[in-house]
Each structure stands twice: as structure tokens, then as C-alpha cells.
Length: 176
Image (cartoon, rainbow, N blue to C red; front, side):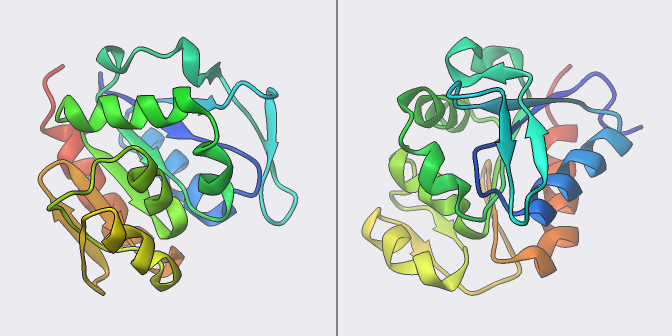
């Protein structure tokens, strides 16, 4: 399995897109990664749309970016909740600054905006947050998946196969 020995975080908060959470969760496990679900710490269980629950393994303020090889941020409206918690924003910033793969799909680009990691980066997202990403300094393009160094971004659940193919490739390059 190509990700044996790798550890990847998936962030969660209420109103996560169920496809954008569960597809990466199981795809990473299938590839052999150890997946840790990280929430805000506000509660242990988070509800997606429509009404799917996920239990966090850890709160963001208890996570050390050095212990992980990559991070996935699902979309939905969860990123608008996530960015209200400095520990979650700091975790994203730490992972990006450490050069580790960070994958954001749909509205997850809001977390990249709040983490202030988009200046000069080429990205995509759900079209409705394009202006937010551009104002944060990104070059926004309308493509299925965009890889800019360690940032991997996609637009919608339809893009999940390409999104996860690139994320698995990037995490697979990390040293164990």
C-alpha cells in the first residue's frame, strides 16, 4: 500500500460535506495511511450535511503538525466554522509552512485564506469563494485539481477522484 507508515489529518466541523469527508477518509485508509480526524475541540461529534455524524479523534490544539505527513480539509460550510478556531487555522498554516501536502476542496479554501498561505499561489475552489481566495493573494483558476507545490485544491465533489489521486501521490513522496 503506497501510504503505509504515513499519517494524515482530516479536519472536521459541523456542516462538512459528507462526500468531501468520507471519500478522502476511506481512500487514504485504502492506500494504507493512518487517518486522524481532528475537530475544533468544541465537541467530540460533528454533524455533516445531511445529518451524518463524525467523531473527532483529537482537538486541533492537541495536534503537533510535526507528527503528520499531510492534511485534508473537506468543504461544505464546515470551513467557515473551522476558521473561527485559532488552533485549526494555526494547524493548517503549520502544515503548509512545513511543506507538507495540504489538500482543500470546495469551500475549504476559506481555511487557506484564514491561514494566510495563499499569496502568489495558484489554486481553485468552489466558484463562490473565488473572490475570497483572490483577495487573499491567490491566482484562482477553474480547473478540476490544481497542485501548487504542497497545496492541492479542487472545486466540487465531482473532482474527488483527481483530488485524491494528487493527494495520495504527494503524501507518498513524504519520508516515513
